Amino acid sequence: MPPFFPDISRDINSLLNRDFFHGAPLNVAVRTQTQNGAKFTVQAKQSAAREGAVAPNTPATAPTMPTAGPLLANIQGRWTDKASGVTVTPTWTTANQLTTRVELRKWVPGVTTELVARAAPGSRDPLPTLNVLSVSLLRPSVAAKLAARNISAGAASLGVQLTVSHEKFLTGGELHYDVAKGRVSRYAVALAYVGRGHTLTVSINDSQLTTASLFQRVSRDLDVGLRTTLNAGKLAPQSSTLQLAAKYKPDSTSQVKAKIADTGKMSVSYCQDLKPGVTLGCGASLDTLHWDAQTVHKVGWSLTFNL
Image (cartoon, rainbow, N blue to C red; front, side, top):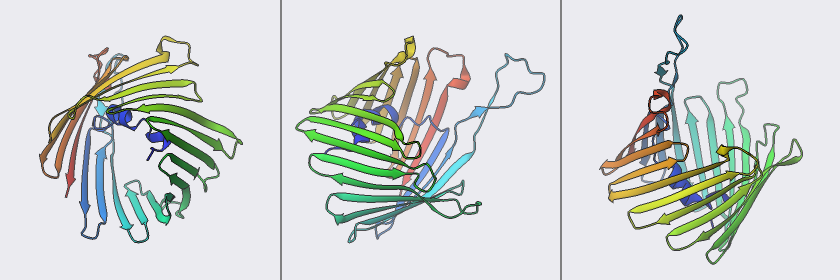
């Protein structure tokens, strides 16, 4: 089955963006599953630090001390009725935002319907609003999706995605139409070659941003990849960027990741299973061009329990 359009570059996106942990100073997640298949997840994280206020009579050149951001948390449940193909996923956050996702499968073979509604209990407008309504089609050589967003917010938009596969090649595109403004808001096209253990992808969007990426599974324990972008509409030295990344698994219970960009930003992370169901992760983001600027460096920890 071909992937949906956003997942054409899934391998390189995962290598460059997932499991680096520095996005939040602390992240704790607890996942449980009942005997009837219902799943529950409680997640809490300390938001990224922000610069503190400057005391009176402090010289303008004096550094400011970072202060911890607020604690953000949410609880999520997931129930699936296998007989009817209905899945309900409610999520409640500490900001008192309630989101409910309903997926309908099996009603039509290969077709999935999804509804997402949001509500803010206790606010001036506590009634739920329909945020997303989408229909997806998945066939052996075609993946398509039609989605309407912000339906109840007065800023509705329509999005169409299509991916077609033939042997080792994938091609796809997406288009979003702003109903309120009556114009196309964004679009993108992509072409990918998927070989044995490697993927080469080229894409371009309406902002004239061209992206080329290569993902290579060197061995069972080592993945490497690179991504380069060129902004044809921006005539400046910073119009192109390059990122390199690698993931290595020393054994079945740990992994090490690293990435670096031509801007000097470097990220490293380490993940270790302390025991079955308990995983500890730590990561850091460093600016190798400004070692003395402490406020640009980030460190984060993650602790996950799968009970």
